[in-house]
Image 1 (cartoon, rainbow, N blue to C red):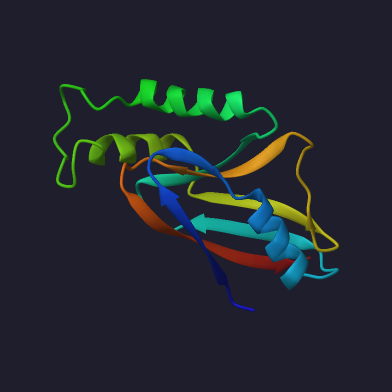
Image 2 (cartoon, rainbow, N blue to C red; image 1 turned 60 degrees about the vertical axis):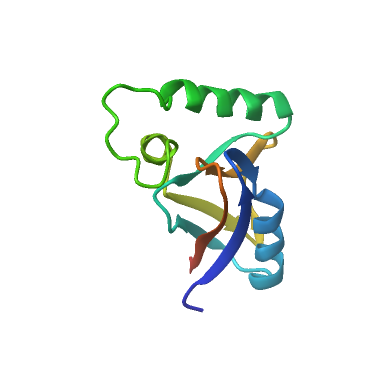
Amino acid sequence: MTYQTLNVQTNGESFYDITKELKKWCSENLASRSGVLHLFIMHTSCALTINESYDPAARRDMERFMKHLAPRDLAFIEHDDEGEDDSPSHMKSILLNQNLGLVVEKGELVIGTWQGIYLAEFRDAPHNRKVVLKFIEG
């Protein structure tokens, strides 16, 4: 296997929990294999992160925190070719990850009880985001 792509449809700025899709992918593609699943997001205005997924209020707090850190009305913003969310989306993406490495044991993701894997979308418009999945056995 070289790599596969997980397509995630977003519908505006939000944190999208992709944990179930990743667990399903592992169970369907990795059976009893163990190693590391490497995730890479192929975009500059969104990101990946692992964080609290049990309480929906935590996700809402994370979304508000990112908007607080990179608001749209910063006086120095020049890059707005695609709208007022353009430059702030890139600022937010540098604060999170474009890559994640996840342990897989016997075909199952090894994550904490309260952890979820998120695609953090920072643009207003809907997008089809691509997450590259590369499994490294070992």
